[in-house]
Length: 102
Image 1 (tube, helix red, strand yellow):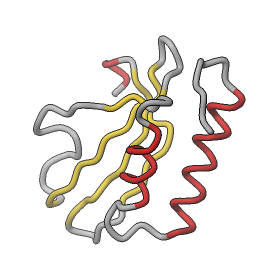
Image 2 (cartoon, rainbow, N blue to C red):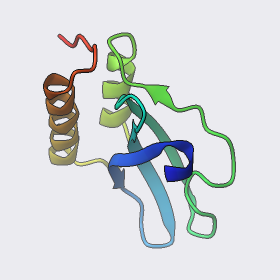
Image 3 (cartoon, one colour):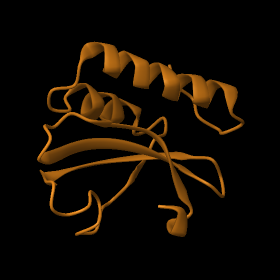
């Protein structure tokens, strides 16, 4: 991620020990915007390493899909969903990024 100008903002892996089921939010270092994607599989490959991903920017236009993707992530606990959602909302509210979330 760092080589692509990204750093992990938040992540959760809801899978067992021999697999992964990840929901990851990255912060883009040049403009502080947040992006998300999911990946899952067996533990042999590195998550997000074996194929191209289409990261989705978190914005007013994508907020609903972001919320639903997080909420419907396999085996996510409601407490984790709420914590992650609050962290993202707090970051957006406190940043100078032009987001409008209602």
